[in-house]
Image (cartoon, rainbow, N blue to C red; front, top):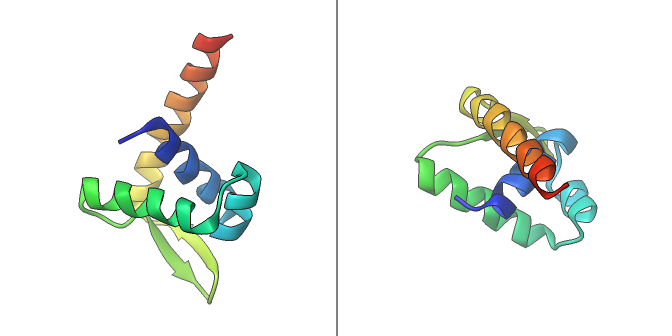
Amino acid sequence: MELYQLRSFVTVAHEGHLTRAAKRLYISQPAVSAHIKALEEEFGCKFFERIGRRNLRLTLAGERLFEFANNLIQQQKELVE
């Protein structure tokens, strides 16, 4: 698990959409997808479920990771400041 993967995860959770998250992160959509896939493989569970064709919603496991990841990213920002 890497901090950049968690940033991608949190951004996708906020946006509910891979492409919008990628634009916000200034990286490609396949890179964001790869970050999410790597996290899901590492933890052995799915963090998002598809809603319609393109929108995503957090699963229960995703909600748990979101809380952890969001706190970690905030702590990292505070440390850097």
